[in-house]
Length: 250
Image 1 (cartoon, one colour):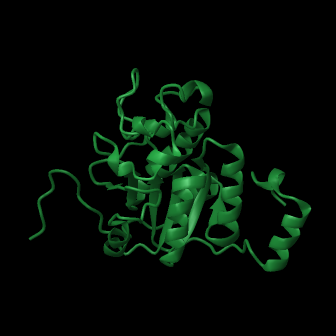
Image 2: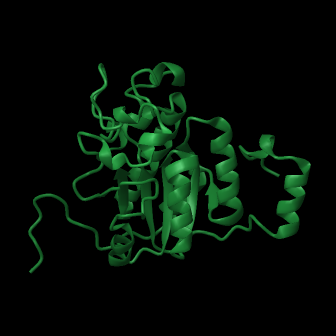
């Protein structure tokens, strides 16, 4: 059996319980997937690959070098999705200048005041990393909380598109990715999480969150297999937005 990233953290009892309870069955891909890229911004990646404790000095939420490994995987998925005409949906955040709308995050993080930018030597943390930044036709969702669904129009966008499933990438695995996956599951979407297309600042939280999602809410699948699946899809499944400058429909 192929070794998974979470195997090193599981006890023999954990393995026996998952098997006996029937969790972790592969559900398979949906027929009309949208690619969801969660918070792959400079704030979570830093502006270059460097050790996490170095990157965090300027970007408090940075996941360090592991973010940049995942960006390479996400870039391949973006290229295929654009070529196939699949919806690509990005999420990011935006906060008031006084950071009031960070809400309870102000109480749980001593550097939350930096989340909106303004750190010396760093730019806007909510800008998308250039290597995978949106095209004019892609969809951008600004979310106020961890889940891409909470307080956003994402669900209605997916209804308009006619998507039946999500391919999920981004960060952090234990936070915004997991919250979004649970909400997508709750909306009865088939969900595939790209194992090497997600990242976190905590190695154990990353691995065990993938384990939990794979057990209950999603299929956790390597990026190479997801790319192979997307390549096999027929083009023209979706009527996508035309992007900036397009004539409005009558």
